[in-house]
Image (cartoon, rainbow over all chains, first blue to last red; front, side, top):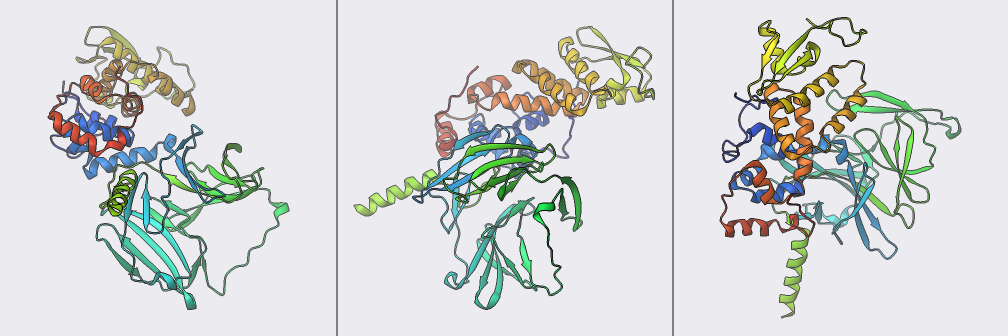
Length: 324
Length: 167
């Protein structure tokens, strides 16, 4: 009996990818796209057709969509700066409450973009770095062109705001025209949604509404969601104020869970729907001494990207050669 | 076709169909459960046949699929209960059993069960040796030993000292 697939794709992803496997291709794809990146990389050596399949843009996209749709994969990276300015990077899974130390030592230097354990070096932009008063970075993934981008907002003296975009595919910077005055307060985009970075900006307008609210009288908070397809705000739900004294909001999961920092530096996850507060491991030696970043696995390989360990090894070889 | 008496218990009053496995066992299934399978739904729409013979699904696998369909057709169960049933359903099952199950979901076109089983299979596979994967899926190794060593060397980071399983 011919097998019918539950989700028939219009055309096979890689015509011969499953040629030497008796299992139906669609089913095999269904299973393989649910594997973690590390397993997929190891399974490249199962056979040549698998190896080819794993590097096709279609498979990479399918895998990424699959990975990010699973709530169990909600993880974030905690970057802690200690008193002696040493860096610790941990990977933290919100569901399992398990902390894993990552093998990065000093990854965040100004010219490097860190993607998991890989880094790439990008050329500097035309704008004179010295003249900047403030720089804010954002990362963008252009799914249509399969291109990774770095967005840079900078302010020069005299309140001139500039926006530049670096594209990995073209390996160059492009300036974007902005026709209104604004100020961003953070050094990086506040959130990345569907591959687009978002900032909170202060827009200079005279008709800006004044908002005041009395802390003592807050009984409920409304969460509003911005739909960037329809460009409108919608009220998502209302929740009671958190009983924990939140000092900083660090991260928000797709399901609406909030990662916050208490005034004493303790991290917690708050679920607005159930009202539950779960404390995580004690990280901060002193308040506000760490940053958090959303973590997602992807098979996407960026041109020019090298593994951090390999870079370290290469640097050691270079240093040794120089000594000789 | 589908009964509108939602409050009534699942009884013989509801329309049912008989499904026969390839080894001859017959199962009485309520129509509301059967139509959760896209293939069975099509068959039932095309002809008024109350006996469906499945030539490539054995009785053990069919019994599992039917248990799944009946649970998901039960309007009295909340979505949360159904989700925990799904987890319970695949837990502890051998990889071989899951293989037959996923093939059956493919034939019967039960998408949600297919995804649940595929996820479970991936969870079992993820820490296995390459040799185990080749064995389970009957895949020929078409690399020369040198080429295989080279491909492993290029992605050395994925081959850390973690314990990989072979059974």
